[in-house]
Amino acid sequence: MATNRPTIEATKREQFGSRVTRRLRRTGQVPGVVYGGSDGTATSFAADARALRRVLVGAGALIDLKVDGQARPVILKDMQLHPVRGDLVHVDFVEVRLDEKIQTTVALHAEGGDDAPGVKEGGVLELPTHQLNIEALPTAIPDQITIDVSGLGMAETMHLGAITPPEGVTFLDDPEETIVATIVIPSEEPAEPELEEEAGVVGEEAAAEAGAEGATGDEASQAGEAAADAESGE
Image (cartoon, rainbow, N blue to C red; front, side, top):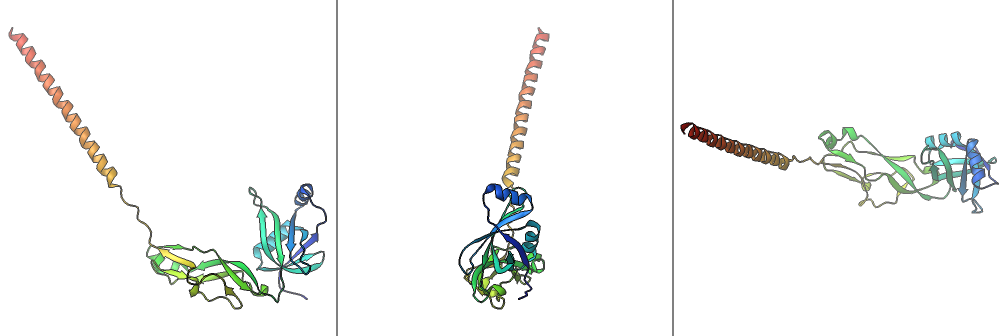
């Protein structure tokens, strides 16, 4: 049956080991594993890296993974990236049943931050929660949960309880304890009077020392002049 879900074409892997994996990656393939299924076993596969990356970036939560022509509805479990190049090096999927609810996570996205009164007054918008735990049928899992923070004022906080979940989605996090957005008053950097006062004290001490040295020099000069006068009188 045709669906609107994105499809990843893959081939089943029969050979394993580091040498085989390196050879796969050199040919533009990414190894992966899909867990679950009717028999509960894991299936190893390989898929084109560019096609895989394109689907993962632009797709929703539910994907059709077609291994050797057999389509399986899956959701992404994990993906590993190269620590330097950022290339996709491995991917894990979980096969799901479309008629059974599952628990998963979904990204939280905020919009309207620049229009929030608290931000316009100089506050800073903080989003302490980046993902929400949800339960839903695989076909009802949203790409992300979007919240509108344009009404937040200075020092105001939005909790999960203020958000209406999408149809078919149940939030699993505590609605009263989970903070999704807040506008905090920016901390003012205090002036450093100690440095200014210290500089003033140092300046005064330097001036005093200079004055003392000047007085000592005058006294020495006067003593020298007196001695010269005495010698002249003799």
